Every structure is written in structure tokens, then in C-alpha cells.
Length: 384
Ligand SMILES: [Zn+2]
Image: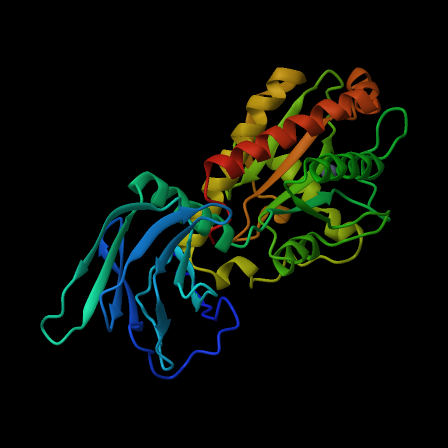
């Protein structure tokens, strides 16, 4: 729990040129002590030199407790002792023109005066005015909750959207001759805009124009930005022109089937195409992090993929066994849940036409937004 440091502002209510010594018949307030008397009871003890008449009442906006003591003044060296009561915001005091000494405690809850009484001098104390103020526990819990929310800096999830391919790496080419790299960029931008429109996310893109990027660079960009989730957008292609449907991939060393393995191999070739092949480098970024983090990340990646599948199924055609596994290089950030979405087959004439329609891509984007909403709502992705 976050402890909020409280600053108790104490100042004079009214410009009172307080006399150093009490005049005849006038009491003097020697001390004010405020402490937690019980769980939900704040106790104020006011040390008085003489017995005095008093009045206790409450005021609103802000919630405050007021104690008026007749014909009294405050000792010059009065320095109230305040226990660390976090619902007490301010304690101030001062003498009013009619000779009344007023003490005001500003609190977070509507104060309810439970008890007030005067104790005669005893055990070395002078007269003591005691006021007990109660709040209900539910009030208190509510206040605490609000404080905690206010104290916690609200950080929006940062999503790194990766438009597959780019530059001289065109990706798959459709039968009509359109490039995967253009489609993925369009889709990525639409997803970005939709996410930003919710106001719930920060979004970055690995590329927002037609440029070549190595797979490892894309992963590194996500890690440098400390992204919370990485989403790579691709479109599939197959010899079988009837193949159609969306699929969502998460990382696995062992591909879920030979088709998945072949796809991963094709996508991983992007680096070779742009002349930045790191595949022979044995030192993987993943090896610098402990296995536990990686397992947690893979778990969260799978959760996101499953949410996406659920949402996509409601709106678009999906491949059987929609959530698949393969060794995509772009999914290898050890600490960022990552998914790769193959939004459909460019090799399927009908599906290519669908993918070119903004209304269809809108369905894809809103399904992804819903899946992300579920992920961040139901799982502790941000507490890394
Ligand atoms: Zn691709």
C-alpha cells in the first residue's frame, strides 16, 4: 500500500495578536493533541488552563469539525501534536473577535461527533476538553481507496504494433499483384487509430512508412520502448488457393504443424531479403533473461491469442485451430507478450478482396481492440 505523506498546515485563522499571558477570567489553550482513539475514531484533546464553555459542531465543503471555546486564547508556543491520521487534512486555530477560540479540523469524511466532555485537572494535566469523532468503516475504506487510486500514477498500456515486412521485403504477393507489406501497414495504422481513439492505450509502430526493418530490430524497438504488448500484423499465402481464414500465432520452438513451420520459415526469411540475417548468431536476446519471465510472457501471449481468436470468430473467417504456434523470430521478446496475426490469405482471391475492404479491416481492428481490453482488464500485464 502506498503511504501518502501528509502535510499538516497549521496557521492562524484570523489575524490575532495573541497576548502572551491570559487576561483575568480568560482561559488559555496550552496544547491540542489529535490521535487515533480507535479504528474509526479520531480523538482531539485540548489542554485548557481554565474550565471554559464550548461548542462542537460540523460544517461541510470541505468536511470539517469545529470546536469553539468561549473566552479563550491560544498559548504563544502552541504546537499541536498530531498523530499520523491520514484522513485529517488540516488543523487550524485562531481567536475570533468575540473572544472565542476556534479550532477547525478538516477531514476527508463527514465527521460525526460521538462524545465531548471536559475532564478536571488530574495526573499532571490541566483541564482537558475531549472530543471523539467517528466515521464509519465503509466511509474510511472508501476514502482510502480513492487515495490509493489517486496516488497510483495511471499508466496506459503501451502497445507496439508491427506492420510486417516493408521496403524491399514485400512479403507475400497476391494473385492480383498487391503486396503484403502495404496491406500490413494499412491494417497496422487502422488498428493504431482505433486503439488511440479508446483513450485507453498508448501506441507505437515499428514502422509507419514503407521501410525495411530486421526482425530483431522490431523486437528491440518494442523492448527499448518498454512496450507492454507486441502485435505483429501479417497476411498469409499458400499454394492451395482455396486456403482462407485468419490465424493467430504465439512463439514456440516446436511448430504446431508443418504448415506453421513453413510459414514461420517464410516470415523469418525477411531478414535475409533485406540483407540483415542474424539467424546464425547464437546469442539470442532471450538468453539474458530468466526462464520464469519468459514462461510468464508466453503464458500471457497465449491468453491474448486466445482472446483474439474468440473475438475474431464472431466477425470473420478463421482457420481451423486458429491459435497456432511457431518459431517466429519477431515473437522472441522474452519479456513482452507477443502475438503475430495472419489476417488472411492473399493467395485466396475472395479473401484478398475482403482484406482490401476498409469495412472488413475495421472488423479485424475492433476484434483486436476487444481482445486487448480483455487482456488488460483480466490480467496483470502492467505489473512487471
Ligand atoms: Zn508476412
